[in-house]
View 1: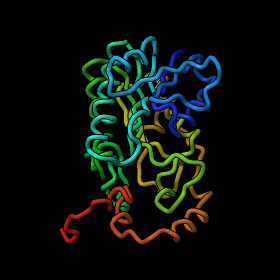
View 2 (view 1 turned 90 degrees about the horizontal axis):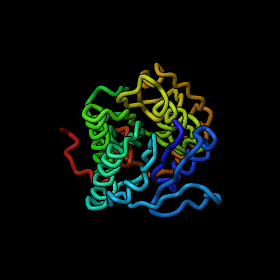
View 3 (view 1 turned 30 degrees about the horizontal axis):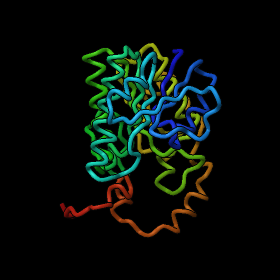
View 4 (view 1 turned 90 degrees about the vertical axis):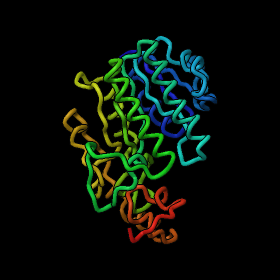
Length: 267
């Protein structure tokens, strides 16, 4: 793998990953609707709006692997999610197919399965249970990646990212936190491992309270170094300052589940 495109390159995850992967791959191209502030002179940048297929085609031209982080990163209106995360995701996969890209890493999210209870440890075989329109868009991206892997031969890895940060910020994130270097390790497995055809991994570190079985990633060489327990006291102290959220506290998706929630809890 010589030439890698990172979409959503100006965002927090894109910025973190580009710093870690710089030097790993000889040529990293950044793409976003706005130019990243940390680009150095001579860095490869192609501006692209994901809703414009022609612009996306320019971004993927000559590329071997794509790390697709672009899109709307939180809950939004249906129009926002539709354009940025569904139409934009389709354009990325279709442009990659047309350009002969070999591999795509799709940044899925824990919100694709956010309505599983926190008491249930899950793998990747069960049905999706999105907790928001944003989560629905990530479930769509996983399904689209599966289609392009089976029908067009793209090698696709979907990363259900928990929460990437320097440290977990509250009790829920003691279960879903991922150290940036660990997420980069998963990206490298997706871009390089010879057994990859279509995979779903959890973007999570070695957390004792993890909601997720990440054994498939471990089988392909994932060895996370981060441990959320190292930050337990400060995370619980921060949790104590948050307002009560009985619905969010029940489910893995937290406040994404309680937002707009009006179901009959007794059912």
